[in-house]
Amino acid sequence: MTVIDELFLGLPLWVQTLFWVTLVVILASIGSVVVLLILGHRFRRRVRRLAERGGGPTESDFLWVFLVPALNEEVTIADSVARLRATRATNAVFLVIDDGSDDRTGEILAGIDDPRLHVLTRTPPEARKGKAAALNAAYRDARAFIAADPRYSTWTEDRVIVGVVDADGRLDPLAPEAVAFHFGDAGVGGVQVLVRIYNRRGWLTWAQDVEFSSFGLVFQAGRAWWGIANMGGNGQFNRLSALASIDDGSGPWRDRLTEDQDLGVRLIQAGWAGVQENRVSINQQGLNSVRRLYRQRVRWAQGNWQALSLLGGVFRPRLPFFARLDSIYYLITPPLQLLTGIALVVSVIESLIDQVPYRPSYWWVLIIFLGLSFGPGVATLVLRGGRWYSPFVAIVQVIPYTVYSWLTFGALAVSVVRQLSGRTSWAKTPREAADDADAPVLRSADSLSGESAAPADSPP
Image (cartoon, rainbow, N blue to C red; front, side, top):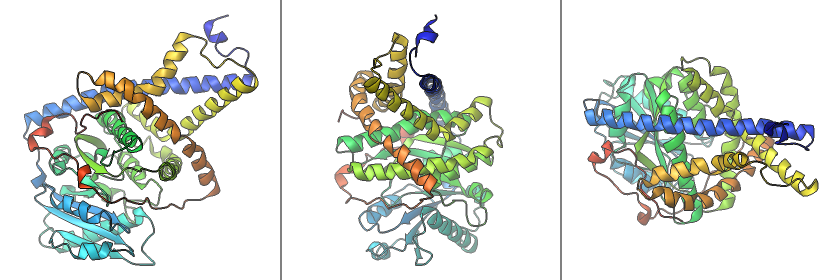
């Protein structure tokens, strides 16, 4: 009898089948992370080399239209707009969508004196129909006033860059310069900047910051090598002509719980490249409540289930084989994660009820488990640190981060029930008062030659 035959010996056949399928998924996941780490390193080297060479477009070569969806954002809107006004963009428009607010949001916006600021006030029954509807309204409004206003009408749609900044967003002032670098390639339709959490004063918000950093520094950077990095809901920049190419008549955004993911995938499937820019970041608020975090992740997980409908378009763009394979893997992540979760529950039941020893039969099984559980987290923490001692700090930090990642795992199962029952309602995430002490560190333009905007962190 071989080692393979002995691995799950004695378990019911259906359990053996489940565990074998799960083992294949785990191995594929580890392989995916390794490949993306390598490609991400190559992508960062390419960006650094081209940036040092110079000669590309600058931010002044584009018209920047910043869209800020705002629904009852009196706590953060003044801070967000003030930081946008400090953004180093020669040609800029700030379009804030007051989506039926009944607090002081409109009053605060009315008190800001800046000719670049435009406020699109939406009222019932059109207001409060979701972020996608608000962004589509702003998209139509922006196209109309760009065409009608002599100050903007000379800009062609391939030279207009539409950025989405949430009402709690704190965009790096150097973002337009860094993003313009990528739009020098006419095939690039979208650029996503690194997302950070600025109020990381405790373990929960620190872990969210690591989570977002992981997505940007590892997964997005690797996919950017192929041009299939996806867009996020905050800090995404899209060429106006790219948005127009997927406009179905109601606008480029669709009514999805993760409208940002949906838009990014459809841009790629329409033939546009998506890249990640990690030299600059957008800072946003994290959630200090486990209950609110769980509710947010249920919504995101359900949006990922909705994205399964995009699988049919994976074969439209001309992509390398492994890029296409990764696109499929990205979209089917929710069922694969659910399968892994079911296998974990079954393993615990087998251990408690059937007295099956809850330990690996062979050392390599333990290595696989540890690699999947802690590998991506360690890699992210090392990349965030950027110091010689970062690997040692990462080993300590990865334990609390892994515990955090398990906390929200149940959201996946709840999201399945919601999706199958047809419940697509959502609740707006409350904001907390902005604190200047949480402000991100501003950097000089010379820092764009570096690899990442992520500073070193101390353990929580």
